[in-house]
Length: 142
Image: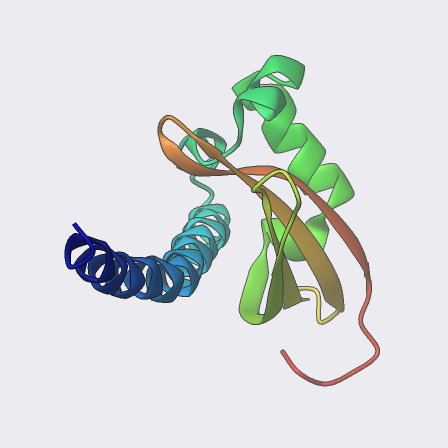
């Protein structure tokens, strides 16, 4: 019996090391997937395709707005996002509840740039945009 125990430990150690190595890769994959969703939505806005852009919003956003109300909110409150000419993802952070925060610099067709923080949540249909806050950008990144 004494010989069985060391083998079990030798098997458990590689498995635990593999799981530890897999965790950051999953996080990186999540961040990339979330980033793609934001960039897809910005592209849809550029094409005035608010139907597609709305599909990338979270269930919470769908509960607050219908498609027309969503378009009105974006055009009225976020002109640089509604008509962007460039967007750069500057960083990201994982929230305690699994949400992802992406930090972007977005330059609008109007010539102004904003710093934006997007919150994304993982829903049954994939990562979805749950909200965004912006402030004027004073740098020249975008």
